[in-house]
Every structure is written in structure tokens, then in C-alpha cells.
Image (cartoon, rainbow, N blue to C red; front, side):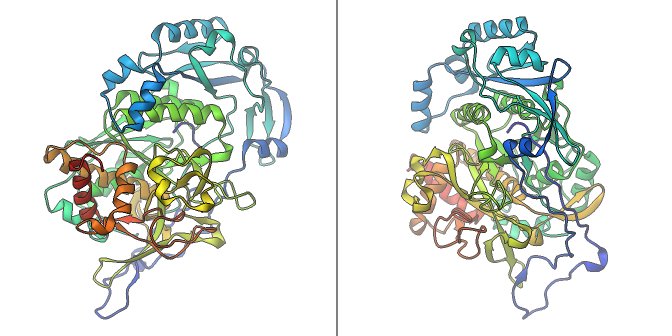
Length: 555
């Protein structure tokens, strides 16, 4: 997703004395856990670049001593043919995509030569959708007609930025469609909130994943790929697997690094949580993480490489940022890479954000998170989960924490028109634009997931826990589809919306319809809504519905 900065992760550790035994018979249903009191460590929604510059002290021009890391998005060949393929729901192999749609190699190499002549260290590899170009700020200013300044925030944070609209030189227009990296302030957030909660056994029971696991489905033959911006301590993963009797991570996990992707943040819990949740759902699925630094242009490079490599057909993505704070260059580049992912049959689940309907902050207009706003992505919202006395499913509510200014992200995009698959559930408040989220699952830290970080057992929440839960579920469903000789799911939304609209005709409802709670602005209600989309999964029913959908030709 590109360049991302980590949100402060409020951490609470489970104390043995606070562990809760099983509910006594006859007690009423209760929240999943008796939550340990949380530390008041909530980070506010991030300030957009323009606001940061207004608050910052100017330190003057960036100058030649400031190095910038630019990513130039490249135009695909045969765009009309690609658009038709996507609209028809057809897919191609990575090699077929490269031969017909990837950027023109001659033009890409000409652009690399031009950028090199202008003082950049530029590189491109066949099939990639971008050129990486690193060099002095002065070279970027001359090439793109912008002014880049250095700034310092009141808290002492230094950054460089330009608010000018870049002008692409004529020699690049034929191949370059966008550029990112003209500031190092704009960063996406990991949507983890804080760490005793749902154990793997609880998760399998609550969302009826046990029905799939009892069929022998464990993720074998599937690979989930993840873009990440904080590093991972392998000892945490080993301790988690040993504690819950899961296969060791070693044979299943691959970590991809590249000096051109920058330096990731120190381990902050996000990557660990993503991997542990997927592993508890699909314990034999392979996992590949692409670890990048938090600057947008650098993380864009890692994401582009992840789609180019196509090592797995499921993307689990727990990072993003306020949509209105994302420049058009980054949005256009990500949309282009995402088109490639859809065309190659990849499913992409993204956290919808943790600031409710106000992803850009409570003092702003309602807003959604990017890239979950992209119509080619499955946006995953959040709920608060309540177990029955027996430990099974009782109910869920939309996750909302007004005092903390937290909750499930949702609302209407500022930029993208409503996609065809969503028109039947178009709401007036959506004003004809893409509506978020598509689905949901547990995200409230008070009913969150048991995980291990920094060697200690704790509890984690946020929509960044919901996205890997759906990704792990998809690994089981894909495994079952292949076992039955059917194609994999690919882009999930057309199937999900078909299921939602035809739920009463299916053998069992594939979703738990969440009808209470809110996202600080919009209420949850029957059917699709801005707080939880179609709701959370009943994995056994979801799997059966997906089989019917594909056997029926996608309708």
C-alpha cells in the first residue's frame, strides 16, 4: 500500500491473575473477554500534509543535501482491453498480463535513461508498474517544476514536502502517469490498537471456521502475501505457535526485503498480529511478507513487487491512511497496481480504518480510509464480539468508542464512483460514490485477539485484526474450491455482494448481519450499511455459497 507510518499501538498485557475461567452454566452471554483495563494510549487521527505545513516552522529550501525517493507510476499498454477484462470479471496469468498489458519496455528504459541524466539513481525491471528514482531534492525540483522545503513541527519532527503540483516533462508523458515521494511526511497507519482475548479455538468456533477445519481444510497449497512497514521478531511467532499447538512458522514464512524499499520501523506488533491471526485460521498456508519503510514512494515499490511476484493469490493488508490526505499520484499508482492484481485473480482484504467515520480526524468532514476506498479492494470493517455462554456466536455490534474517537471505518469515497456490484445497495448518503466497508469482523480491542508480542501474551484489536481474519478464511475457501476442481475466488466483492443480495435463497446465511452500534456517524442496520457492510462471516455457510456462486458462472 505503499508508504506507511505506524500508529501508536496502545499495549496492555494480560496478567495471570486477570485470566477468566469458563462462564458458569446459566450466566447470560457476555463479551468475549473480561478486558484488562486499557492504558490511555490512543493516537489521534493523523493531520493531513497541508495542516502540518501550516503548523510547522519553515527551515528553508530542502537543497541538494536532502535526498528524495520518487516512484514514477507507468502507463499500462492496451488500457481499454484491460478495462474490459476487469469489467467482465476475467483473469489472466502474470505472464499473460506482462505480455499484453505491462508498460512498454522501450519507453520505460528511455525514461530510466532520462532520469539518470537528470541526476537520479533510476531503475526499472520488466513487468513492474513503476520506476524507482532516488536523488537530490534539487534534481526533483528542476525535473518536475516544484519547490521542496524543509519543515519542523512543534514536537520537533522534521520533514520535507512540496505542495506544488508536479509537471511531467514531455519526454516522460508517454509512459509516466503519476509520481509519489515529493514529501516524507505523508504516511499510512497500521490499524492495530492494542494487545489476552480470543484464542485460536475461540476464533474457529465463533465464526464457524471449525466447520471448514473439520473437513481437513488448513490452508495447504495457499499463500497469503502481506505488505508491512514494521519488522517482526521471529521468537514471538514461535512462542505463539508453541502455545496454541500450531505448526511452526519457520517452513511457512518468507520475509522479502530490498534496499530500494527503505528501512522498516522497529517491531511494533502489527506484523506479528497479522501473521498470528492468519496462522491460527489457516495453519498450513504459506506466508510472505514484503517489509518496507514508511515513506509512500518506498512502500509503493514493495507493493508493486509483491503483485509482480504473485507468490500467492490472497493479499492481507492492515495499513492505510486518510483518503483526502492522499495525493492523486499515490492514488493513481495504487489503483493501477490494484487493477493488475485483480486481472491476475488476486483477492485483497484491507482494514477500513480505526477512526470511525472520521478517518481524517473528528474536526473534519466524514471521511474514509485509503486504499480501502478503492472499488477493486475488499474493505473490512470492525465489530465488538459477544460470545454465548457456551463460547459460540451470540451477537456482534458495530465497533464504536466515542470517548477514544475510535471505531470501525466506513462511509463514502471522495473520488471513486459507486461500482456496479454495489449499485443495488446504494445509499443516499453515499452520493453515488464507492461505499465502505464491504464486510466486517471482530476489531474492538475489548473483544480482541490473543497474541504474543515482545515475548509476552496480550490482546490486540483494530480493523487490522479483522483484515487478516478474512484473509485466512479466504485461504480455506480457496483450498476447498481447488479441491473441488473450481477456480479460486479472485476479486471477492462481486461474489460477496451476490451472496448478500441472495442470502435468503442460499442454504444458510453466509453473513452475520450486524444491526446495532455505529461508526460515530452511521448506524448499523439490516442488510448492507456504512458501519459493517454485509457483516461478519459464517465461514461454513460462506464456503458453500462461494461454491454455488462459481458453479453458477458468477451469478
